[in-house]
Each structure stands twice: as structure tokens, then as C-alpha cells.
Image (cartoon, rainbow, N blue to C red; front, side):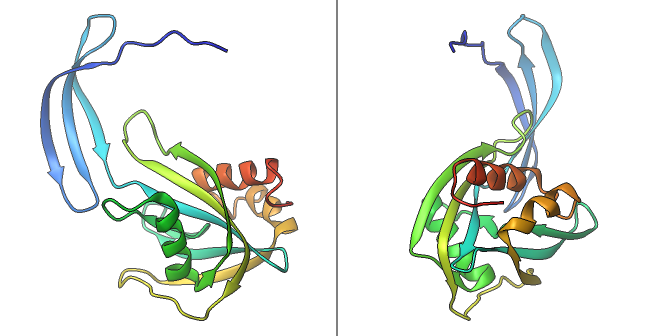
Length: 186
């Protein structure tokens, strides 16, 4: 399948409205491909992050449950976290898995890099599958993290997605892609 290249928008003016450690918000005045101008388009820059579909030797998926302020409640998710500046995605995934869950794995497979919300954000989420994972017992949570580690038989994960217990869309995509590639059986 071939696609014609689309014309990028031309940034005519940019104002930075917010600049913090985890977030930069720009207000751009842009010229669209059709020549029209849009006076206010907001673009969010944030760090890229890495996530892990982690499977134990007992065919259980290692998930994390934590409070997410955006939804005002608990979220059952894959272990994931922000990449440090200059950090390679695989190294970030390994680090986050160990820090959040205390698990290590010898066998890693890249799944995909997703644009988390391509219309207004620059963020990429890099996903990997960690197979044969085992607990080390050592976690290193950040001061803002309150995380419960949850092991779920892989055959139950699809039901957790269908019931709405796993709702993080990009995580759902990574789980389903890992299953489609035969890395995990749901």
C-alpha cells in the first residue's frame, strides 16, 4: 500500500504556555496544507516512555494497580514509566519493570512504539515483551508511586480488558499485539 506524503503544517508562531519537568504546552499559530491559518493549536510535549508485557514461567502476566489522577481512580496496567534523557527504550523498559514490580526477565522482544495521542502530543510509548520473568523481591518506587503488583493468569487478561478493568488504551494495544504475535496466549 502506498500513500501520498501529506504536507506538514507550517508553524508561524509559537508561544510556550507551560514548561515543567513532565510537560511543556505550546500554543502554535499554524498554516494548514490548504493555506488557511489556525490561530490557536495546542501541542503537548512530554517525555517518551516504555512499557512491558511481562509474562512469568507460570504463564501469568505481571500487572500493576495504581491510582491515576486523570481518571480519579485505580488503574490496572502494564508496568511502565518515563524514559530518562538519552535512555534507550529497552533499557528503560527493563529498569521500569524492576523498579515497579521487582521482576527481571532474560528474554525480551520488541512489540511496537505507539504515538499515544498523535493529534496533540509528541509522546511515543515503546513496548516490549519480557518472557520467563521471575521476582527478585527488590523494588525501587518513586516517592509519588503507590503500586500493587498483580499477577493474573494470561488466559484471564482478555476478560479484564473486555470488562473494563484494564482500560489504558495504549496498554491494551500492546497486549493484543503481543498476543497476535504469539508472545502471550490470552
